[in-house]
Image 1: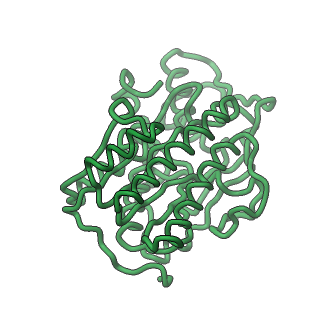
Image 2 (image 1 turned 30 degrees about the horizontal axis):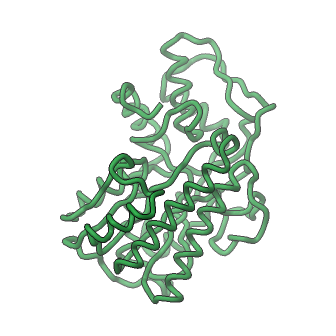
Amino acid sequence: MTEDFARSTLDRSAPLYVAGHRGLVGSAIWRHLKTEGFERLIGRSSAELDLRDRKSVFAFFADERPRNVVLAAAKVGGIMANSAYPVDFLSENLRIQVNVLDAALEHGVERLLFLGSSCIYPKLAPQPIREEYLLTGHLEPSNDAYAIAKIAGILQIQAVRRQHGLPWISAMPTNLYGPGDNFSPKGSHVLPALIRRFEEARRGGIESVTNWGTGSPRREFLHVDDMAAACLHLLDNYDGPEHVNVGTGEDSTILEIAHLVAEEVGYQGRIDWDSSKPDGTPQKLLDVTKLRTSGWNPNIGLREGIGSTIRWYRENIGKVRV
């Protein structure tokens, strides 16, 4: 283990606030914490608490007094949404982060985990991507606004550690998927988008499916339940200023992922590619040595995870985010 990993298990009876507990990541963290014996979980929907509203956030912290916080709330979306609405992704995420982190500091939160994204790294970063590659090159233009917001969150966590000595930490997950994902045509990431597209084609008897780009970019995918387990592992064991990569350490081309999804869905038509659409970053594979050295490894394989996500999608087709 590295010197930043030392046993400091969270008190399961202390109040813990999961910001964004109804989103893909937050809901998985909530489920995992429940199974791990946390007795006083606190959650608010966006309708109940607008994290962009600073006054409301401070009032919430004053009333609830959480001892620990997981900041999983964010405005997220795929390459189409990020390209079309960069102002929204920058402004809303900055406000959410600053409000929650400032209120947590004001009201004495002891442990806090901030969740970012692998898009924080340079577009052409060496592969696999180590934590120290942050801020060493230009970002991918299609999601640079979102990335800048997340980088600001990392730096605020580090600033809190330096100025106030609190054991707050950050984790940077790779591409996540699983139950509760966003399957919207305009807002989804690549894996749920593929699941929706191939399932609709199978049901409709459509002869071909056209996907964005060339299919050549390589992507790493982590099931959200594995991500939730990694979050608790870090809260229990990690106390260091550097963010920690969370992933599988393995990647596949989008072409390979598309064929895997088609197989699991049962779609037998033709798969085409629109090369006039952007591919995004050529490869994003995280170096997860730091996390694995601490004793954590993912448990859900890609085919298994995609299969279970497809089943969840079919069972919840009328309730998913579309």
